[in-house]
Length: 384
Ligand SMILES: [Zn+2]
Image (tube, rainbow, N blue to C red; front, side, top):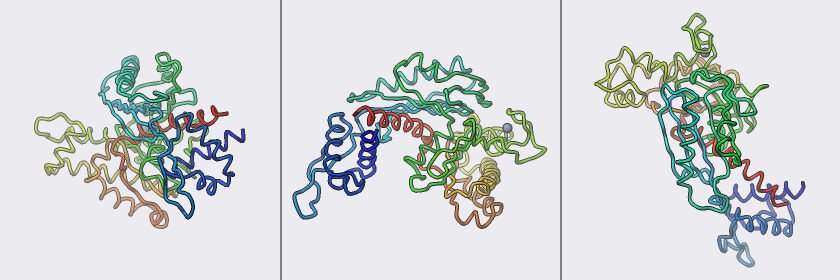
């Protein structure tokens, strides 16, 4: 047990410092040099760490530097959206090696699951050879997921009680598979690889066809009692508003999401193209006033929900991500102005609102990190 913990400490230190000597690991962790040396030797045998040559000397002999072997294995991260599936392959450091995207508009769960399996196959076949191969799969889903990986309710997909993990496991029986809400995965992606690296309290707001939030408090994902926290898309912002697919009225996502854009867009004439988010972005780029106005309205409504969330959590950072972040240029100003007007001033002073820097990859990266994290945990205990 002690050895397992120490191995994990040494491993984390090597990953965090990118390039580090045995002596420095010993200084930072307080473990004695002999212990560090023997643990490092085992990690080298396991192909998880390698020596990179001599570093800078602080007086005596030049130390041998160590690095984490990010290419010891690969993982698959999947963002199952409402209208698309994005599958990525990353190495153990979150570097995206390749990706594959498919539209799933109008498909049901019986059609989507084989498509997921096919996407996993396509991406797997592109993995470079490595000591461990593919070591895990993470899947983010736009709905409520229990600890067994069953999707209990995903209103925008029309799924209730779909045993997703078991279905994928049928095809990949030996593979660790992690299924979680897509906004939780997105928050993890931002915390690990994106704007959230340096903050402890972060809310990631995923704005696609629906809206969800991943909540990280004190560096940990907050999941609530059953794992269903963050359903912010269904907070009421208009008491007498329109009926939502969840059964409630006036839900935030009816006014501030991709589906809101599609609704508003029905009355907007686009030059021959179909009303996808991409076509609206293209029209806005050409300066079409009615489309820009629609984005600004959505930005305003986004601001209303963001102000509510800011007042509740007092976070360091709120990140807007997923598909609608593509329209940052037109959403940002009305969003920030509405937050300025509606959040309590003292809350507003301490919280930043930013758009994701991970393009639309926050969820897929978070999903892949879940698999990386489990693999490293298992590897450090395997060295016993
Ligand atoms: Zn709702």
